[in-house]
Amino acid sequence: MYNLYNMLYMTNFHKNIHLAGTVTVGPKGQVVVPAEVREGMNIKPGDKLVALYFDDKKSVAFITEGQAQSYVQKMGEKFTQFKKELARHTDGAP
Image (cartoon, rainbow, N blue to C red; front, side):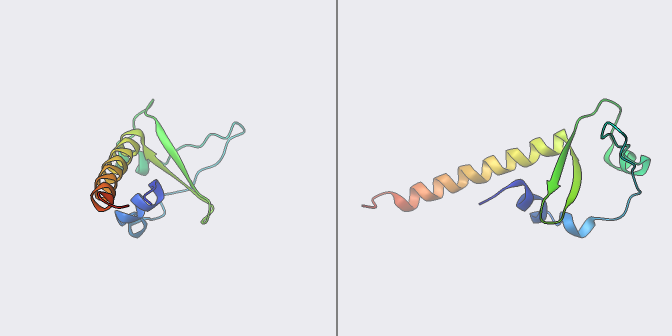
């Protein structure tokens, strides 16, 4: 079944990961995204990011809200295709 984790890996996301700096977690759990990353992702003050936690890797990643919406839309399209295929294969089944 498709999920966000699979969608990220389907786009070769894991092949493009590189060290972009370090962050320090403040007393309220806040972190500052390194300037290089903000510039590369075109993140501006007030933008919303979605935090992804990869339990098996004990890792955190951030994507923009727009990227998250795009992934959800793609998953919805895949689900619609799956439903159509399922209906096509089960029509006339006992």
